[in-house]
Length: 97
Image (tube, rainbow, N blue to C red):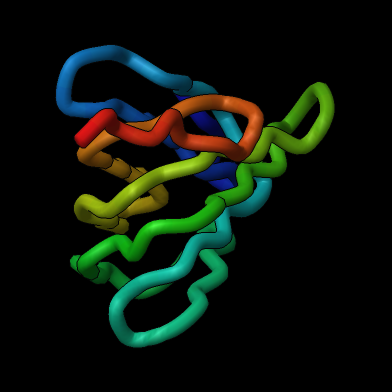
């Protein structure tokens, strides 16, 4: 569990778990534009746009996740991202027609 000055982040896709852990910040593109989340952010629920989201974990290197839409919520230093499809590394596999 994240401490007071950290975010507790959970990223899941429709069919698999992607990443979770303590983070210093999260940034993503929502239907209302780019958003950056730091500890203490106001609660928000937003529609996630296709693109990349970035997580700066408390320890380790920055994590980039490619997503193709979903939802983004923040409440009490907890960030939950539910994506239609997501992949660590920034690229989302395209679906065959």
